[in-house]
Amino acid sequence: MNKEVIITDRVKTFEDACNILGLDPKQHPVADLLPEKDRRAIIAFYKLTVIVRALNEGWEPNWLDWNEWKYYNWFYLDSAGFGFAATNIAATCASTSIGSQLCFKTSALARYARETFRDLYFEFLFIDLPKNYGK
Image (cartoon, one colour):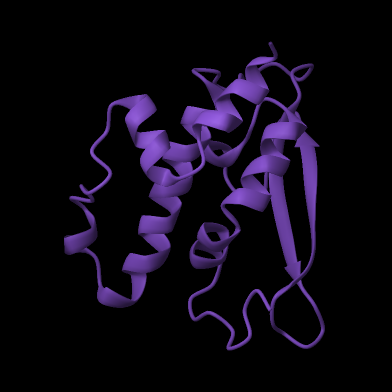
């Protein structure tokens, strides 16, 4: 059976990802040191990083290999300023606009993360969530 199917069946939540990696999902030791306003975004980034590691099953991007495809999600707002108008998956060989820690080994995994962990992406990307976010 395809590994992607297996791992996406095993990682449905942040807690699932922590269990796979042997982490305690309740521990966010740095969070208490951060200003209140920044905590939500930093914790969301941490959670996304853990989820990406679990979904990638040990794969790490080789940024020196221009022939190795790397996939990441990117988002933009619509003209009304709320919610995501569209989401896309981009492949890159050398750089990303969202950070190398959030890249995937396959486009299928990137799509899965975008759909399954959409709320975490919102928390990470927005300082203050728009009133109608996700609606």
